[in-house]
Length: 328
Image (cartoon, rainbow, N blue to C red; front, top):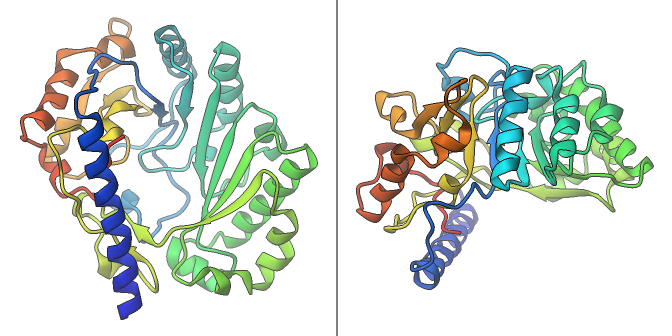
């Protein structure tokens, strides 16, 4: 790792730590255990079509599956009655476009009163109907990619499906522009090389650049989550950097104020963290059933007890070394 990389890493870390401290000092008296979820993260499937070097999907041990339609509908209806407006169809790990009914699910959610629907995708979904997706009511699509050079992509995402990703991404951008930008499409580079180098690749210039602008935008990540210690600096390549662990205040992380529901109806307090050891059970607060709704679980004593652990300084083990901790 060169000196410029070290400087970038710790400047980013210092800024994040400073922001957390300021928020803690300003808002530590404004805290409501009983507010509804700021966002509801719903996992349609935990199956993925890639195996990225920076993602903990490679260590997942959960059984794999897809969310059933009746479960999704009951979750949405319950969330709307609570006053919820914002959902994220991004799995803990997995590829949402692999769910055969994702567009229908989004349309259903919007008709029920959901105002914001966000998904993150790698665009490796050979059967996806992109026109149907664009017009489904989705409000933001974040496309995760290592860029548009095949060898770099395949080394980072560890899949031989570069051509599918390129074709789908280009077509998504084209359709969004053609239809007047009904959604925001963000091409989120997770690349081991710099942004200027990414712009030089022929596939980018031919298939992506013509459609950039308006509601089609580009972003670049340089700092990566350690997934509670599952991902290390040695797993990454090039300019990719692991974020240092952050100071934890006696204040819950912003991510525990989002609801998170797995494809099988299990409700977790965090939708961006798992660790394959028995302590992960601390993140589970219930399972939706015919006798227990998401609302029941969200306001349960088990969730309140979990939040209280932050205030008491008794963090769950999976949270102690988390690099995603953020106050909001």
